[in-house]
Figure 1 (cartoon, helix red, strand yellow):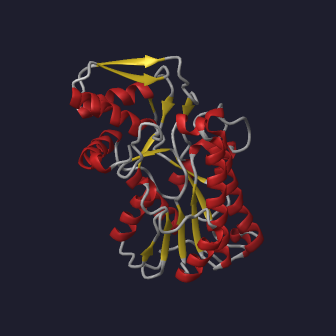
Figure 2 (cartoon, helix red, strand yellow):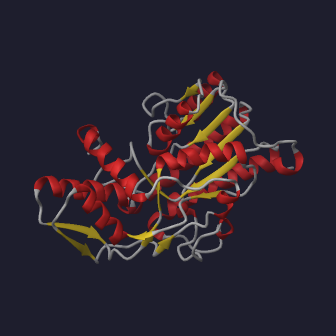
Figure 3 (tube, rainbow, N blue to C red):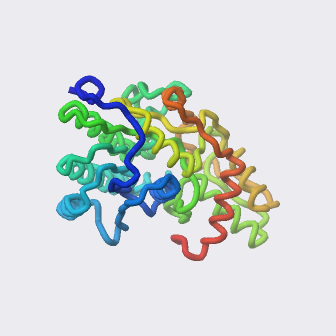
Length: 326
């Protein structure tokens, strides 16, 4: 029995007074979701830092969930990183994310959480999926090898949500964002994704007066970028307007080359030197552009332009650079 077939459930406005657990509330996406929920009048948003609650500790997760008894849950917690981190520590990315997801979702099931949104990543799709990538491209081809361990964990999360819908008839959903950026991103040199890595690199070059910045690859891969505040807005919209077993792509529907994004960041940071490309380093997937038709059909489109989002993010980074992970 699925929620759509077996339950009299229609998505509607969420109860602003109910307990809403955001797992990963300090991270890039989780913090944006908290900001969105606060702005929308939710009065009982809960969360724990990783120091307060290790989501890999099953007993601790179950105890916490039994204590707070949330009505709603967004699972935004994950071990994340860029090409270097994923290539270097595939065991960690697979094991940590599988444990986090299984523990949180099992505890949510045990405590009758009504509405769950599991957040994944566009890396779940095959490396050479037809562009733009539709939701039904899942499991139709080989994954990008530089982050296949992380992708497999996220695919397992989607199937977990689908299994809960089939076995227990709960209206849980999954959302798959494109490349995200914004406040509270990971800007560390070894663990960051491409956009925060470029922001840090060009900002440092602008401040030190460096004449050259060197980036990985050829600069030719095309990527789609979504600001985390747009992602948060989309997640709440889906919780209130969408119900179905298939994951929903969340993105802008447009993409740019890595070279173009580097040029834009150089302009925003005020860097005036040269950019070189180390073609001995991997490019990753040639293109990742999501088909966002399902999201549009649900009534949502992105609002923050790339230029506006980058300007906001660079400003935030400069205001918080001293406190960020090194």
